[in-house]
Length: 348
Length: 87
Image (cartoon, rainbow over all chains, first blue to last red):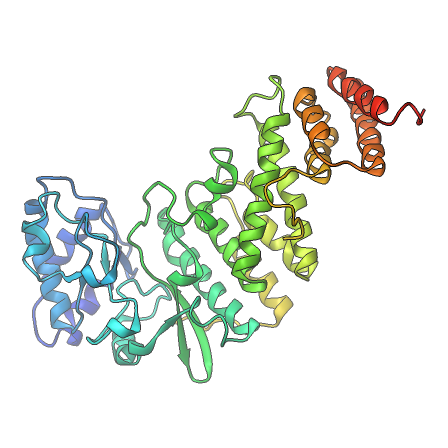
């Protein structure tokens, strides 16, 4: 996923005199079926391009790449069918990216070298979720070379700061992804950058390669692993569920979350075995039985890991498989922030 | 994880899974429950717990006009194992 800021901004000084026409911007947006409101930031998030279509979008890709080159970004993409190792990723300008891969490329698979060791080039998160202006982001881009993820910093950040990073990412998702019906589908601590600035920290989500796609990316964080198809959490709620599990992990440890997952899987299997023919496997009764068992395992977990009740009720809301996408996310964030006295993120 | 018994199903697992069915007044697959209770190590106290749970399940089902036979079957099994010492 690539975020392209307002057309006005692209036309101004950031481009160093290189003209980008309205037409350039329009073509990119049209490809996505996005109709931006005045002054609104725009995400670039195309669906998979099918075989044979690569050439159709090549001119658009070239123009986008050109624009990004001018403003100093290196856009990396993962060749389709290549291993997921970041070392196999190539700059989008590399001609082999399109033409040697007959299945085309996924335009949403834009990314930057995520690992600091590989970040010899100037890196910049193209999907800058916090809503920072492109111009402002550019001025701090060089300092991103040493940026670590929430997972990598879990032993060095305080609990309060770890939570703040996570809540920032959730707030970003809620402000910029969810209203557009986009879900990341692989939210987890290794996919959240920790920005350190002015003695404080903030967080933002990255690695959008699976955004909006189906399938289970990281089983431990995916509602399908916990409830199978007994969950209505398949869209935006999918990410909220993953944020909930990530929060459990931050408040306990990753080992503890694996234990929680295993304990619930075992309980779930028993519930399944105990269910009679009168409880059809896709009924709301079955979901109620699962939720009942899940919340018991969850409460045990919270007690063992000394997670305060005021917090555990919020997390349970995030994990409740019965709730669809109608979640009051700002309320969840503010309740956690209030409990841990986390200062609010200053948005633009 | 507090359950240090690896993959084995303990009586507590059975009780915990059963609890949800009772609270929702849902019948259970009694053969699965009995089979697990039979193969797991169960203390008399846990059996009593199962008994109480199933008595409650039976009542819940009856009051909701739901088939309570599965709980009756488990109650019979547990009473048999307890040697009819509990009335």
